[in-house]
Length: 287
Image (cartoon, rainbow, N blue to C red; front, side, top):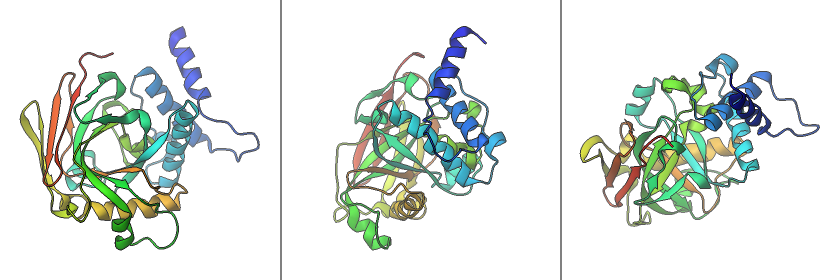
């Protein structure tokens, strides 16, 4: 290993917060977090982490995710929301998993409609079209049901998620992608805002194109039957893990169709009925 790689590995490992007197983190969780942090720091995808945490222990996988997120927060990032992954049967089939997961959205992942996302900011990028919700109220205390979730939504916008994997070749199981922040990379929010009095997510129709060619189609019903059902799942799951949804947060509710790999210079447009169009481009080159 070169001296540069040694320094980067040491830096990645040291980024994991160590609290005096804190309960000792299981060895596999600590090693998995360090592996993913090194991959992000060096931009060299790593081996899957399931050899360290197994394939069925989602608690360990979320512990890795929390540890990696804490390292990013310690470097100055700020939580702005959450993403729900693996909600579309098409994406579940693509990745060989059978249930949803979630990750954390940080401020440095967000982009405005029409922005160019730097190619180097997302490892092994793939894009999917989604409905994003911005919350007007916390989903933290008391009963969580469909009516409560609907009432908590301030507005919806069309969104593109640029998924990325720190794991080489997207060779992932459920535990791998959970640990890797649900394969989060970047997100782009559209300009048109609609309240739920004006827009019904379940019946929305989506078409996504890359460089003018249609690559994905679907409807709101392709996201766990209803994107708001996905938000309800997230609200309950995140609260159970001590990370409840808060007013002002963005929630990416999950893919409405297949993911598509992206090359440098690609231009992506999604049209979601009732929410309009959202567009982005991927920067050219590898830097």
